Length: 205
Image 1 (cartoon, rainbow, N blue to C red):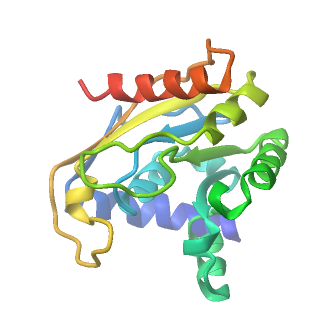
Image 2 (image 1 turned 60 degrees about the vertical axis):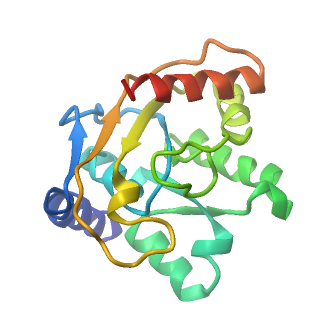
Image 3 (image 1 turned 135 degrees about the vertical axis):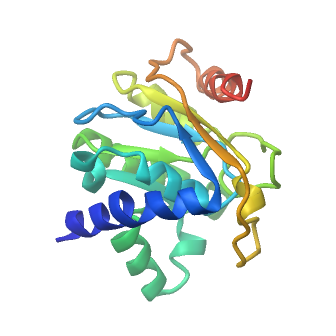
């Protein structure tokens, strides 16, 4: 039932909505079905998650999870339920809340079951077109799972459509550019974080 709901939202309603507000995804079919990956992207707007989820192949929607902060999307029970039901999120605590180790263990369990993740390494939405420093969690996760490729994604313009703190959607030309599945070459956590950040920034040009 949940899978059917996700298909309706992200393969039926969301592509039309994204087109109306000016979001373009390139390439048109960026992901292979039945593949496991960790999507990593910069983050300026809630539109980002919607665009990425709409790019997931139909068969994989139910086992692909955006990772979100429990302090925001889990601040009350009804919001947590809605985010899990309609967005398929995994809610975690941020490192400053003492939850990084536990969060990484939780994400690791989902990966061990063959699920895929969508992660915004900045940790929260920043100012439009300004990338914040990446947190080390993505480096730890990829270091622990070297057999799973990451897919870099550069998102441009969504912060103009729905900036942080705003509720009014304003159409604007935005681009979601997917890179290729990539296995980490770096070994240390810090080097992996730098590699992922560089891969995302390369897509900007």
